[in-house]
Image (cartoon, rainbow, N blue to C red; front, side, top):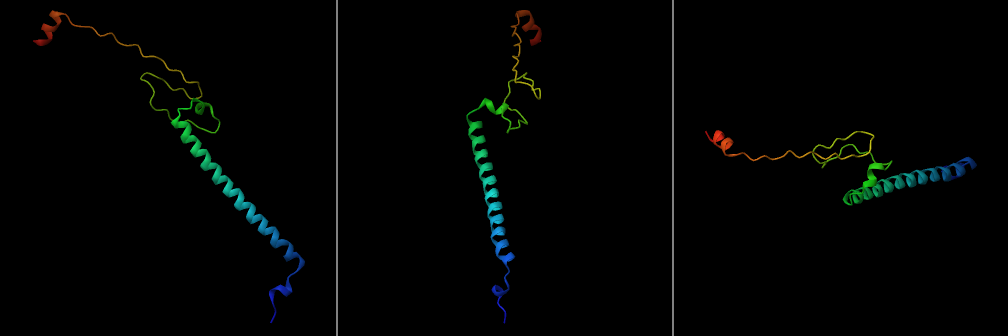
Length: 104
């Protein structure tokens, strides 16, 4: 009966450590990518809670929608944020003749 170790060539003894190195390297790179994504997500949540204005200019963040804008504000893609104030409409009180017309 032949044992597998008896037929091992010099090529086999060199390729197995290389394949293990490739496997460990791929695992390490995958773990690093997942760790970095988790860290970036946690950082983004913290920056959103702090209302960090630099998020609008961050290269790694794409702003798809802005909520909570004041009435009358316009959003122009690729432009800096400009908030235009809405002109208040004057409130006019009715005099006695106008009140009597509406009450009829």
